[in-house]
Structure formats: C-alpha cells, structure tokens
Length: 458
Image 1 (cartoon, rainbow, N blue to C red):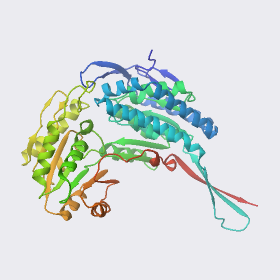
Image 2 (image 1 turned 45 degrees about the vertical axis):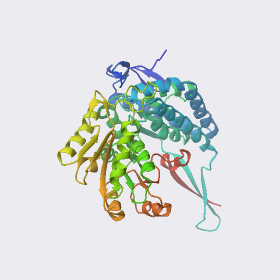
Image 3 (image 1 turned 120 degrees about the horizontal axis):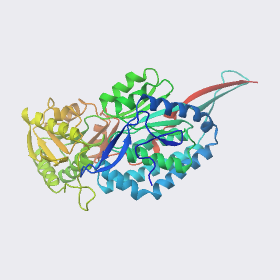
Image 4 (image 1 turned 135 degrees about the vertical axis):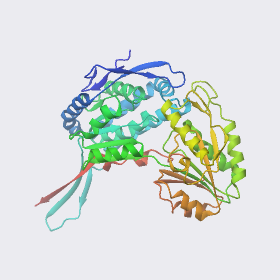
C-alpha cells in the first residue's frame, strides 16, 4: 500500500499539505490518472527546512560508514523495486522501457558510488606558514541542501544531488517537478524511509514551481540550491539565491557537427539518436545539425531514412522507440519552433505533425542562424540541419550559441580533437553523442561541502 500518494514527506512522516490541496498525475501516453501529489506552498517548505535544519547536525556527526550503510540500503531497496520504478517512469515521463531501466540503474549506481565517499580523506594537511604550527584543511557539510529537479530524468537527476549531499552529512529538501512527482519524489521518499534515513534528513515537498520551488530557493536557512532545468529558470534561481551557493545544470542549443570527411551513414545514425532519443527531451539532445555542404544531401537523406524507421506509440508496448512528449505545452512549444522557422524559409522533409502528445520524428533543412530552430533549445524530436561551406564556418556557428554538449564527426580523430578543443561547451564528443561514459567521476564533494581551515600552534 502506497502511503505517500498526495502527501509530502517531512520529518520522517508522510503528511498532508498545509492547505490540504492535491493535483492529479496522468500517464502521458493515455492521459489516464495514475496518482495524486500534494500541492505544497511556503508553509510546507518552511516546515521541511526546519525539520532538515534540526536533523542535520546529528546526521553529520554520524560516522561516514554509518551514512554509507544507509545509502547502500537505499540502493538495495531501489533494486528490489526496479520493476515498479520502471513502470512508473514509463507512465509518468513517456519514455520507453529501456530509458527507464537505464535511469534506475544509474540512480542505484550513484547511491553506491556516493556510499564509498566516506572512505576518502575529509581534508588535507597544508604547508605550515611557520615553525611549530600544524595547518589542517577539512571539508564540512553545508547544512541544508535544496534540490529542485526536472521531469525528463526525475529519479537519476534527484540522486545526482541527493546522494552526495547525504554522503557529505547534509540534510536535503527535494522539490521534484510537478509533471513527475511520483518516481522522482513520492517513491523516493518511501525508499528513504524504509532504508532508515533519520527523520528530517531527507524531505520531499511536491508542488508547482512558483508555489513550492521558489520559497525553497528563497529560504535563508538553505545553504545550497541545486537546480537542473531551463536557462530562464536557472537565471531566476541565481537572482533569488543572492550570495548563497547555487549549483545549476542548464541546457542550450547543442550542436552536432559533421565535417567533410565524416562517414555519412555512421554520423546520421548517431545524429538521429542524438535528436530523437526520449523524444529529444534531454539537455544532451542535439538541437542543431551543422553539416559540411559537400555531405549535406547524403547526410539528410540518411537522417530522413532513420526518422522513417522509428516507431511512435505508447512506450509500454514492445517495439516502440518514440513515446509522447511530456505535456501539451511542450508539444505546442516544439511545433511553434518548427512553424516559425518554416515561415522564415526552412523546409520540413519528414514529420512536423503530431497526434495528441505524439510528435513525429522531424527533419528540417534550410535552417539558418537567425531561425528559432537554430537559436533555441528544441527539446523535441526535431533535427534541424544547417549547411556550411567549411570547418571554420562550422566552428563559428557552433560557438555562436550556448551549449552543454557538442559533438563533431570526422574520419580524422586528431582533426576532431583539435576541433573539440576550440568549442566552448562543457562537454564534447568526437564521433559520438550523448552523456559521459561514466557516472562515478563527476561526483564532486566540494559542491556539497565547505572548507574549514584549522591552525594548531604547539
């Protein structure tokens, strides 16, 4: 029996929202109601932060091995409930089963990796400024960490912040996206409760962004706001947080560059995946295909063939590779980007139509740098293609937009490396696309701790 439906998780208990209001959660493919979630507000956030503030010192005082044991129990419970989490993620996000299984596996891995952090050194012995003095530098937890997560990967993107924050001795208040409050919030609270996370150390407040997310970001007792989402909301989070710490994972118009010596078929296969996987609704999806003019027609033809082979439908059904978009608002935004670009001279070769939330995989050519499909992050199953005359133009156009992950395809690996080193994005792939190959090495304890200097004079 699920205790968490329509409730927050605060202070170790599943509690009704302060105003007693809830909202429904719907399966994206069928529009069937699958649950409810609490509509939190500033009073719920205050209660959760107060609970976290009270519980955090005792949690930080526990031995690292004790905190690690709790994280490992969470990982084991996630693994024991994998089918439930996968089913919920498919229904709640509209992603296919393979995507959901990968997300659960990544969340389990993050918990296991962070459980091992307690074995690492808590600090360093620094060079002494004078004889007879010992200078220590130690990491100490920040206190209360506020985590605001998006809807596209609600479980793993919660664990990306929650697991290291807990491992470092912080308490957490999590506000999951209102479109995916079950897998990324309610079920996660159940796992934490059963794993023995002490009351108040982990809290979940669900609700709309302005009503629950903004009060969390504004709360003076929240030492760090960890936010994953759009650039616009990220800028708002920065302004709200003021001088307090913020950790932002934002998006951008990622480029997929095909140089004149690339293998067209391999590049098109990778390019199709990078634009269409999970309906293009990831921060690592390619929003711009920048292709050398000598390969343009062959690349586009191969990309169109790839798009035509993709089966669109209910992601719970076998063989389906492309499910629904997350909401009608997102569908309308994607379609507006396509329509406005077509009005400016672009041409749709395949797709550009939708049925409900199901948007066809779309290839658009003739996209120029002033068009919406070039400038804005698409976040839909659309591959906009721009032709360029040479590598210099490809580099200039790639760097003309903010991006999180760019990619370049070439038959010359050293040429690809040289191109990659000139890009301004955080991550770059050569002859590939997608996330980084491993999850373990991007856990940064410094993000969730502060440094304390201790000088000891004999």
